[in-house]
Length: 232
Image 1 (cartoon, rainbow, N blue to C red):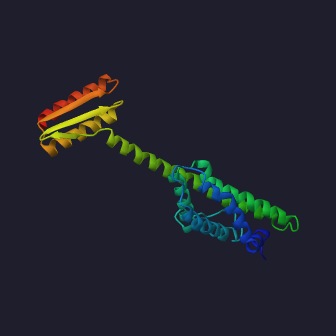
Image 2 (image 1 turned 180 degrees about the vertical axis):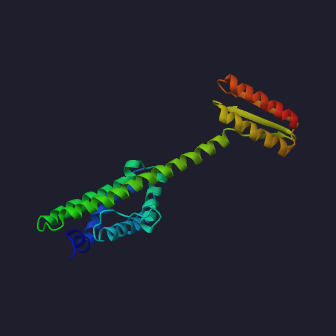
């Protein structure tokens, strides 16, 4: 015997999908300077919808055995990645799951007004599945956003320590901004690599763009100069 939730998913799939898409698609159009690929969203959202429905249509259980490496997780992570890379925030990253939860809960309550069989079981199962998916979406968003920030930080760090070849065996290292211990170590590594690569005899260290040098950083730079002398 099918439950109220299973009958709802079977009889009103197209209606529920249409209502959900109408609510979530603006998220792909309203954020970020570059936006999100609307074509990709139009494919991934229905696929995610069907994946969620397939789980909810199963007989309710005490525990939702979610596979973080399964197909449903893949759909969910792709959509969250679009949000993260397109400039969305964590609220929108889980918002489309919570919107689906609201739509299904309201629709299920409406159907339960006519039939109360398995009401508590259906509602608990619905909440358990969608809450777990929302949590996974949030975790994925944070992980992806941290990866993006790390990659951007590394790129900026590379750009902030350029070693320029002025002439044959003459290098220029212009430094701008605050230099901490981590950046000072990178300066040493990049400078020594460049000296060895170009067989430099002279290196000009330009510190005019550095507002403040603390004692530890100054000592590190002096050691860098000593090491450069050994190479060049």
